[in-house]
Length: 467
Image (spheres, helix red, strand yellow):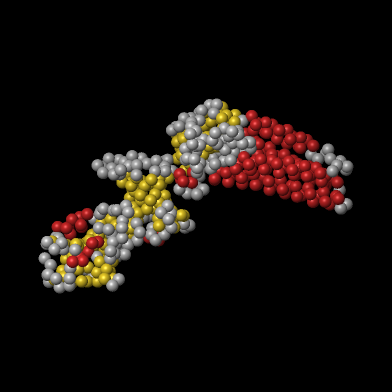
C-alpha cells in the first residue's frame, strides 16, 4: 500500500475530493521506479503497470464505548455505603452504593399517610353541604405542586437521556391524574345543574383524590428506591459523570457517539436544590466516599461497557456518498503512534451534523478491531473518547492499469499524460478511474507497459526525444 497523507493538498491536473487519498501496492511503485529513465533535464520516465488502487477518504474520528450509563443522586443526601472502587468491573444488577436522604424519606412517609387516608375515606367524609368545587381546587393544587416538584428534581439530572425518561414518567403520572380530575369536574358540574346525584360527584372526586395520592406516593417511592444504586449494565466503574472534570458537564452521547444510545440509569425524582458541590466542577474532586454530600442530580458513578469498542468518524458531505456499510478502514490513534487498527463501517447517518472543520458532515459508525504496531506487536487497547483518523477505503480497482499520480496533468480541462512512442513524447488524453495519491487508475488512453513521463511533465514538448 502507498503512503497516505493525513491532510492531502489538491494536485494540479487531477480532480480530487477533499480529504481523499489512495492506497496502492508498493510493489507496483517499485516496479515503475525500476524502469525509470532520467536525464539532466529533470524529466523522468516510467512504465504503466497493473496494480491495485484503493481510494481512501480520511476523516477525523473518536473511539466510542458499546454502552454507558451514569447513575445520579435521586435527592439531596450523603453516601451511606460504597461497595465498589473506580476501575472495578461489575455485572448488571450489582449493588454499587447507597445514599441516605432524610428529606426523601420524609416525603415518602407523608405520601404514604396521605394515600392510606384517601383509601380509608373513599369519599365518605363528603356530605351534601361540602364545597365540592373547593375540594377539587385544593386537590388540583396539591397535584400541581407535586408534579412541579418532580419536574424540578428531574431537570437537575445532567444526562439528557435519563432526564428525558424521568420527565416522561412525570408526564404520564400527570395525564392519569388529569383524566380522573376531568371526570370529577364533570360530575360536580352535573350536580350543580341538578341533573346528577351528589353521590356521583362525591365518588368521582374521591377517585381523583385517590389517584392524586397514589401518584404522589409512586413518585416519592421512586425517589427513595433510586437512592440504592445498582449497575444497569455490565462494565467498568468510573466515579462521576462520563466527562468528569469538564466545566460543561458530561454527556454520554459523546462517549457512545449516538444520540440516545444509552444504557439504563438511575434517575432523580424529588429533592430540593442543595449547596453541595457538583462532581465535575472545576477544582472539585470527583472521588466518591462514604459521607460525601450530594445534591439531587449529581452524577455519582458511570458504568462503561468496553467489551466492544467502536468508532465515530465525521465525513464531509462531498465524500459521504462514497461510503457504504461493510467498507474496510484503517485507523490511526493520536495516543498510539505507529499503531494501525482495523475497522469496518457499520452505518452512515442520514441526518448531518455540524463539522468541526466547518460546513456539513455526516457521522459514520464503525466497528473497531484489533491493532498492530510497526514491529508486529499487538497495539494497546484504545479507550473511549480517544482521538483518531479513519482511512475509509471507499473504492477499489484490482489489477488496474495504473500510473504515478504525478504523470497526470490537465490541458483545456481534460486529463492527459505524456507517452513515449518511437522515442518521442506524445500527449495523450486519458480517463481517470479510481484516483490515488501515489497511483491513479487509467481506464482509457494508456496500456500496460506504455512508457509515460512521471516527473517534469511541464518541461516536455510534443515530439521531444526522450530516453
